[in-house]
Image 1 (spheres, rainbow, N blue to C red):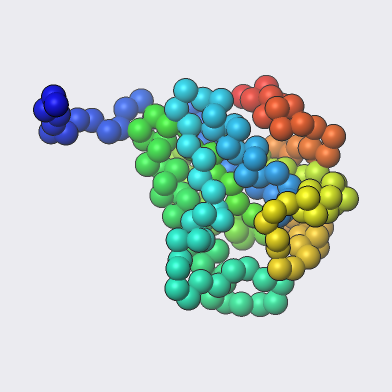
Image 2: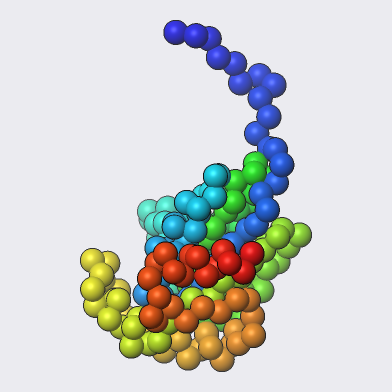
Length: 183
């Protein structure tokens, strides 16, 4: 077996041209779109907010409609961890694509603060609530609560922020093509 050495190996290279933050309500297609978008680059990474939350194996608090300060803290922790990973991938020339449920301006500003000085592209997936409802009903993943009220909150608080895509009548390929066409 040939001998290999990590000594002197450079991890960081030419920074990636983009950092994507793909947001929307549960069922809007964030994970599917983000994974496919990352695959379109020669070096791409999909950073899924839900998977970062799953790393908390004891004492985890998932977001819920009722106020839960610990759940809010953990939501920001996952945003910070996604941002740390995105910075690392970006520096190494890997295009990071973060997907997360972001519907409040304060949450978006938290991400922006942690991703400042990076070539951030904010992608807002906003299919109609009826389409989201159908998608959620067809999923294997069952949500404990009805999150449709988040659509109204997102549209009110984040109007005019980023690039909005109504993907109600679009396929996955069409959605990713539309995102890349705006590059």
